[in-house]
Image (cartoon, rainbow, N blue to C red; front, top):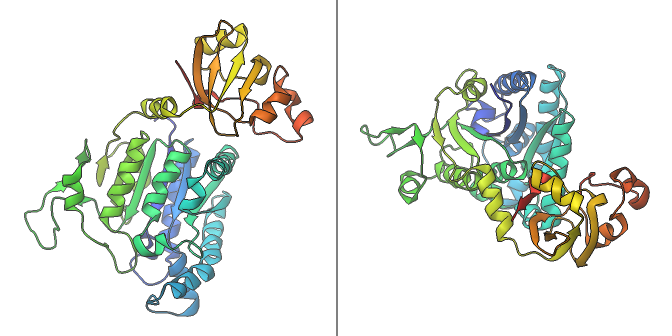
Amino acid sequence: MSRKRIVVKLGTSTLTGGTTRLSRRAMLGIVGQAAELLEAGHEVTLVSSGAMAAGREALGFTKLPPHLAGKQMLAAIGQPRLMQAWAELFSIYERTVGQVLLTRGDLAHRSGYLNARDALEALLAAGLVPIVNENDTIATDEIRVGDNDNLSALVANLIDADLLVILSDIPGLYTADPRAHLDAEFLSVIEHLDESHFAMAGGSGSALGTGGMLTKLQAAQLAGQSGTTTIIAPGSEPQILPRLVAGERIGTTILPSSTRRESRERWLLAERPTGTICVDSGAVRRLKQGGASLLPVGITKIEGSFERGDAVRLQAPNGNALAVGLVSYSADELHQLMGISSRQIVHILGYTYGEEAIHRDNLVLM
């Protein structure tokens, strides 16, 4: 089994076991499965709902408040309790978790996107388990439309995940509501997600959660555009995560619309370069050999003004366009770093975003 980077989205119904409060037994089941995947060498990120359910449990509320401020209040009370539960359960398997709270607005701006990506990458590199949730106290979209489904797709894009698993009380996609149509057919695999599939999706699937099949298909479409496969599956199924990763067909698998590499290349080539980095012949040779990043030592000249995360054009000594990539440092920072060894970055800047001026994953040759 090849090593995979997996994002698992957990709906409220999965975390509560169908009750009105968090089910530690259900959560422990997920933790045990995640630990099994981690032991096998996979990387696991959880996108966890349940903050409002934890808040309801703490206050003894039997129903969600009808007004938005009340739901935000429950999220504020429940989020630390939710994280405490995850931390205690993962500690049984000697695993440490890290909380990452995001809003869609955080990812709409380049700096926020890069900071979120770097935080998640650092957690994964350290062997930790990121627990991501919408920042419900200030973000209202999740409360209204179940945006944790779409947030999970954005997280999958952030960390370039191989697989997005959306666990819920919904077993997958049917051609019609099986509760009302006995002849409804279950769709095991969707090769090309289109409007006909969205027409099959209904409203919210559970009184406990806020997201239905529609938001799950939206998430699958978003993840698929980045080259990530999505599986919508029942969270109550025993050992669901290891079985899915092993290739067992459970739930509805939605194949990506492009490969991860094709998607990234198209995106990078579509970006309008904001500057030019001229490189020496040694850098040209290493980049053309494939699999190499651009290091500061290979930079000879910088043209234009750009910020960290912007797209720039790489130019060979003969003036030919060589590549397009996303820079790890701004133009001002690279002016200080060009021609020097990566070991000197911290000494010169006082901090580092990594030893690469442009990482190979953020670079495509022309």
